[in-house]
Amino acid sequence: MVQITEPPHRYSIGAAVFEAPPLGPGLYVTATPIGNLGDITLRALETLSAADLILCEDTRVTAKLLNRYGIRNSLSPYHDHNAAKVRPAVLARMADGQALALVSDAGSPLLSDPGYKLVQAAVEAGIAVTAIPGASAVLDALTLSALPPDRFMFCGFLPARSGARRHFLEDLKGVHATLVMFDTAGRLAESLEDIAAILGDRDVAVGRELTKLHEQVIRGPAREVRDELLARQSLKGEITLVIAPPVADAIPAPQAMVDSALRKALETMPASRAAAEIAKRFGLSKQETYARLLELKEGG
Image (tube, rainbow, N blue to C red; front, side):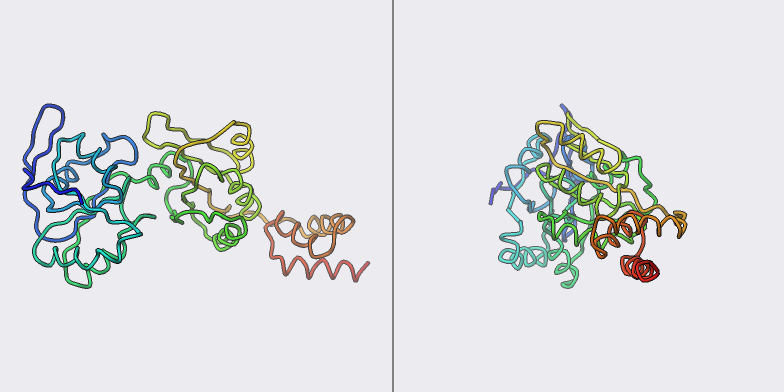
């Protein structure tokens, strides 16, 4: 733990120095910038200045933010690898009347970051929990995506392996909402191929290095975006991916068109594969499409 004796509870913005008001006991879940250090709120600065202790994923990352705003305070690691061990002592400090701030390396804590179990335990212990809102890669990417924002679902990180990723996407196929998820740059092209295969070639928006100097958003159908990414030598940075919802009122294809496609598919592939391909193309049930294919075969 990085220990500072008797912090002065001050912060600075430029040449101006401010005194932070005292905090009541409890847990303060505090959002920090996702890239641009200017995206910090005044409440967050006051909280980080006045807290008795700041819990953070990486003390080195949080120290950079505190140095930017002239904050001298004690930092203690709280991450997935030590949370279970240190949580009882953290809860005891708050029960004794201390105010503790919880931050992640970037953005709002608990969103794919440690902290959920601490909040849960604090609530169960009757300890006050306060959210200090601020930057969020989820909302930033959704805003920039140009996709419907009225109903959305945050899905966390996409699984690393294709099989698990495709199963994950199958579960989201019927969700009538814009989907927001995190991914890594190295496997993004593979993820977009799986998205197109399972969800259809929906429009997507890839947010890269959001709020930073080289912020970029790539928009378009999933396979077109994948092809654009593959044409580049490399892609770096943190990725937030936004996927359009399914078409709400898609007009079903005429049965004659589906039957014709099934007959043509049967000429080059086995029945099960033909049914799967045509069901995916027209957005139909695999089971019902296979049953219809069998009827066509029996009828000649």
